[in-house]
Length: 512
Image 1 (tube, one colour):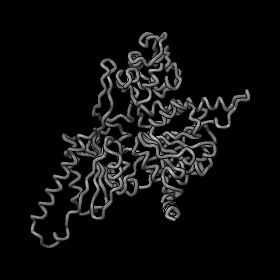
Image 2 (spheres, rainbow, N blue to C red):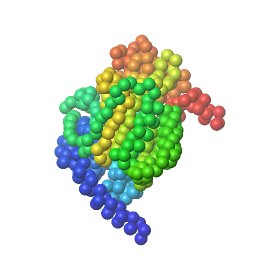
Image 3 (spheres, rainbow, N blue to C red):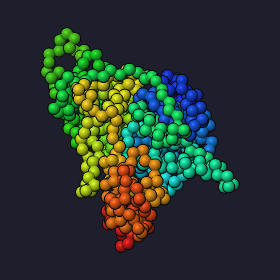
C-alpha cells in the first residue's frame, strides 16, 4: 500500500516537472538530437550551461528506443554530479527511485543501480574505466555519453580512448561476414557533451566521417558578469567580505543563495570561519544600534554557511546542496567540485576567485603536488553558469578584465601533468600492449611514459620480456615502440585505484 502511494506521488511530481522540462532550451531540439544519434556513430553536442544536456538527453534517448539493445552510460567527472543528476532524472521520469527504477548511479564505494532494471546509469568516469578493465567492449551499453568533456581530467582522457576502442571493435564484430556476428555486440554510439569545448579536436579524434557536431543556442536565464576594478591581494578575505556586503543589501532577499569558488579545503575553512565572524559582528552592531523608525523592520536575515569539497563525507555534501530554510540565506564555499553539472537550489550569486588547484607531477623526482593556478576562460564561464540555473543571476569575479583576458581559453589536459604508471597499468589490463596503438586525444609526454614503465617494472607489474626503452624509441608522440604485458603481480596492483607501493602489491606473498 505504501509502495503504491509512493509511486503515485512520484508520478504526480513527474507530471509537475514535465512543464519545467518543456521550458528548458534543449526541449525544442529533442527530435533533432534523437535523429542525429540514430543517423551517425558519434555526436559532439555543444550548448550553454543550464540548457538541460545532462538531464534531458538521456531521457530523449530512452524515449527514442535506444535502451532496447543495452543501457545508456553517462559519465561525470565528479561523484556528486553523478548522484544529484541521477536523482533529478529519476524524479522527472517518475518510474521509481534511483536504483529501483530505470535510473541508477555508480560512484566509488557505492553502486546504486540494478543490472536488470537500470537503463540510464550515471557514473564517474573512473568507475566506467574500472568496468572497461573487466569488459573492454562495454557490452552492457548501447550508448556512452561523456559529459563535461572540456575538463580534460586524467580519467576522461583515458576513457575517451577506451570508449573509442570499444566502438571500433564492436563495429568490426558487427560487420563480420564470417557468420560470428553476435546480436549483443551492436555498434556502440558515443556522445560528447560540453558547453565550452572546441569541437574540432574531438571530431578529428572520433573520425570526421562518422561524427556530427550539433550546436544548441539559448540560455534559460541571463547572467550578469561583474569584474573587480583592481587585482585582489587576498581573495579569500575579499570573498568573505563581499558575501557579507551582499547579505546586508536591502534589495538582496535571503532566498537568493551565494556560491563562492575557492581552491581547496584550507582556504574554504578559513573563508567559512571569516564569514561567520563577520556575520556575528554584523548582528552585534545591529543589536547595539537604537531601534527607531524603519530600523525595526530591517532585521538581518539568517545565514547558513556550508563547506563543499571532495574529501567531505557524501552526506555532508548533499546536505549543503539541499539545505533550504525560509528567511535564511544559504552560502556554499566550494572547490571546483560544484563547477559543472550540479544545480544547487536557490543559488543566484556566484563569487569567483579565479584560481583552482591543478595536479603537477615531476617525472624526474616522481613527486606529485597540487599547485594553485589561474583557471581558464571556459572554467570561468562554467562557474558563472551556476548562478543562472533556476533564475537570472549575477557572477562577481574577484579579478579584473585584464586578468581575465590573460587566462587560457581552455584548461590543459591532465594527461600532460599526471603520473602515468596507473594509466599504463590500466591499458595493459585491458589488453593494450602498445600504448602507441591506443587512440589519444592528445599524446602523453615521452618522459611520463618512460617514468611510468620504470615504476611498473620495479613493482613487478610487467611480465619479463624485451621492453624497449621509451627514451630510445619514443617518437614525437612519446609512446612509439613500447610494448608490455601485465604480469600476475600487475593484475593484483590493478585492483586498487593506484599502485601506491611495492609493499601493498606484495601483501599476498607474505600472507598479509
